[in-house]
Length: 251
Image 1 (tube, rainbow, N blue to C red):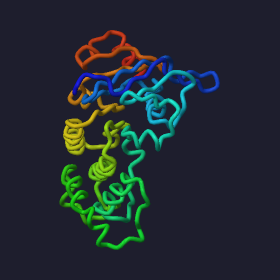
Image 2 (image 1 turned 45 degrees about the horizontal axis):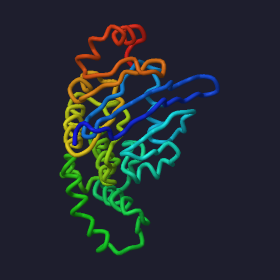
Image 3 (image 1 turned 120 degrees about the vertical axis):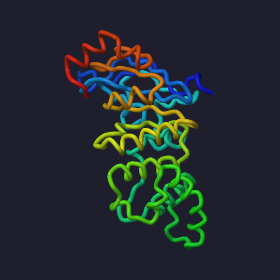
Image 4 (image 1 turned 135 degrees about the horizontal axis):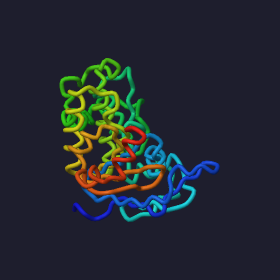
């Protein structure tokens, strides 16, 4: 149900030997929403993402995901609970085909071995599920292409497919549009919107037109603190937000 909180932080703080990268961040992400985290360079967005995905431990504060305190958990445990950082945790092997990559990701979800020793017949039992995911991300025509041969935007779609194979409850997308041309941005935006119909998405994104188009709610960080929060219209009209961007440049 849209509205109840699926991810929440309380007083989330990260201090690196006296430099406070994230300071007392209280974040609430509504279930079923697309929520963006934006801000100028050095605002603390990446550090915040690293704390949420447990690649860093907070100096103080608490992180609650789907009603459970995950502050002390390891990244793999958090991913198993359904909080997955896309483009970081996805398993894309350049010299395997698209369908082979997605099939391996489907095996990861079962929590066992990758089953390289098992018969092809057993592995091919995953083909239908793999093809459904491949079709969902618009890669049906590329199913038997090697990952290394895919155009950049299609490769990002494959990375998203391998992440979706883990059946996450919530996706953390770290700059999903980075390095993309206009056509790829349109394709990946549509894909994120489709994914969010059954999941929650929290994204760091520099492209503010993408944020305006996709996101239900936006948290603006500057100097490690929350500067403003709200929908795009509210946030973009905030004088403090305009000053932060105009004063330091977008980043």
